[in-house]
Length: 309
Image (cartoon, rainbow, N blue to C red):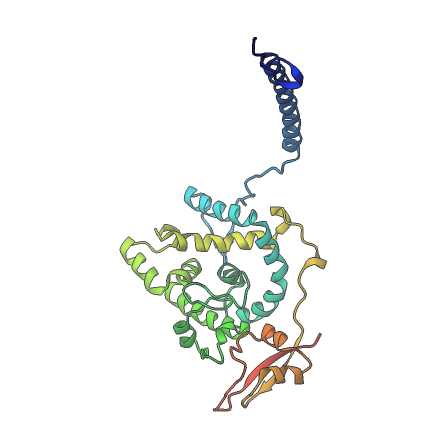
């Protein structure tokens, strides 16, 4: 008796195998056709990524940036690419700018610091008054404790004025002003904010040059000044770089009143409630208050912001 091998539906195994192979090839062809159609559809709807427009000329704090040099041009283009295509962060910066520029711009002007340095705060902290770096630099201007104290800020466990927008802006301005008195070059001043005065002095002496654009610096510092320039270009003309943010979408300015505190506060939650707000709201507008209380043994005067809306 012969043994019969049967496959699908009673068909001999060989015939079943041929039928499966044929069906598989047909299905593969259909899948390939659909894939090609889908691919064509996706390709036609994909966004087009282009190099952001680089101006023929640019000035940083009034001084011409030498864009005719390939290294300068490529460094600036790199930072334009990074920030123009970091869509979520850059849109948020555009929306935040009116709120915080309205606070820091008048102070920079009073302190004799060029308006372009508002973008240094953007590069440092993303306009976040509560920013803290891994190295312990704090606030919108990313001041370390020693530099903050040297420039007149209080830094304790209860009060840290590096988080105070107005006071930290004045402290940063004092540093920038003293650096300009030393270098008489705003690009070098900006670089020194990242590398420190000693670092810039060392590079200038070692390399025997006087211009920021002639210095070989660590990558972080080299990119730093170009990042400030790129942010200035994008935030001053967002539409040119593909950002569409209407006036209605901009975050509102803060409207506050100031309450003087010249003695101890035993509980800031009670203090907040007594002024018709929550503890969370109090700390949102006054991140420089670092504890739930204020000892204030020397009866120092502090001005606490209370929102009026």
